[in-house]
Image 1: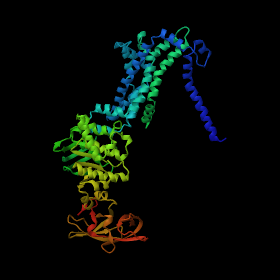
Image 2: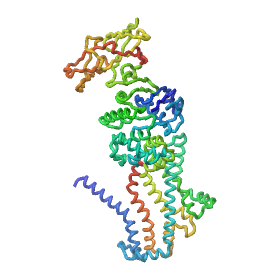
Image 3: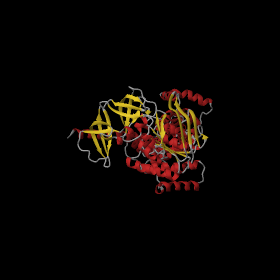
Image 4: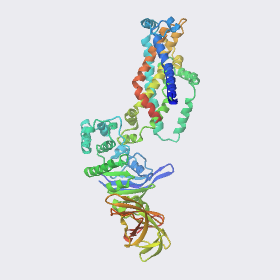
Length: 270
Length: 359
């Protein structure tokens, strides 16, 4: 038995453990959604026949279409606005020369290190003063100028050929037309990757919606799942079913844009 | 087609001047090539004509109209870029029609123009392909097609062949010459390849460090360079340079001693001001102008390498620390370690210590 073979075996064992750790929670979640709460607590690992009952219980406790609608609205609008604002900023930072450009950008990167918890209270005060409390606008607005996504687009824009912009200028396009008709289609893999990141963030967002959304009508899926766990005897079957349903859209988005996502990630570091 | 003129054109980035006052006129239908080493400002000058770089000082006129502050799309120019700059998400057809679409031309007019350009460039079967599905040469033709459909007054080419392999470059060079004849277009073409410049140009502008070193037809520059830089830059293989010292000057002639070749003398008639006795000069001679020994000032050189190209042979030889290239028509040079050549006085060019030609 050679060293190389041993090493290869070791790599396979490591990867198997990593795969198990990654996949098992999803499996357990899916299994749990089909079982009764006591079975789940006992650690049953096989699929059960309680899916429809769990679904009925979930529907009686939660206005599912409304909650999903809220989450979708917030995630989709957040994603669209974040992509527009942040990609414009990233394009601008990379394309336009200015003496203070790098200073401003460094300042932005510095701001990235401030944790959200430190910004939460002042942000809430601002939102309240603007009388946006308990509105979707309050959830969406603070996130649309995402420094991370601006940084991501700026890095990706470094790979955007300058001569394309020059060619478009000679062809008679204004700067906004270059952005819309040349830059955006050329950078679609970057947009795809950013879509996944932003959509997932917006969909999974918990803390900020918890603070600014008060009435049940406005609750998102993450807030609702947390209320399900708050019961005296939580029904884990119902909770896990809700979790499966909440995970589905992000998985769909990921698998639809997966190829573009990988290309976009590669492009960003090239 | 339209003429173009540059008067005292300057460009600075902050306090750094990159174009230091260029005066030039380009006649209608002329093929003008900007040539020079990397960093000499030739691409910057082209981009200033295109409107992609601002003009710090001076006047740019195209067709008699001042164009300094006019939008690139309204200057009547079309540009072909080194990297082709094709829009990757658009088909060849859409790439070629893109400018016309933004100019508000009707669809049937765009289709007609695109088809006409495709016919000229033999791009018909490729019209529905994406740039990624084309070879380098095909992409280059699409880039040229995109320029043609706009019917510009002036075509601007920025090193358009430098990304192609050697064989394709020769082919595209011939295509460009044909296109120029067919379109009767005014063309300004940037290259660092002096073979391209020599073969394509009606007029060559040699640039050096942001200034025009010399303007002339290819053969004028080859036969009659104004300075050492142009003499060395134009011609392949390069002109040979030998160090000399003026040992006598008077009565319209200067006698030069070749200091690295045992002080052998060459007497050169000079029409203009004569150099001073004792002044160091440079003597230039093209590889094909060396004569057989005994016909002028003779040199005996040690042969380093002989390159047999079939119709001609280049002998790389050393003498007194100077490496010289000699062109010979004989196919068999023998295995001799030395070669004896002569420098005919009428073929030798003389440059003063500042590199300026002494005529």
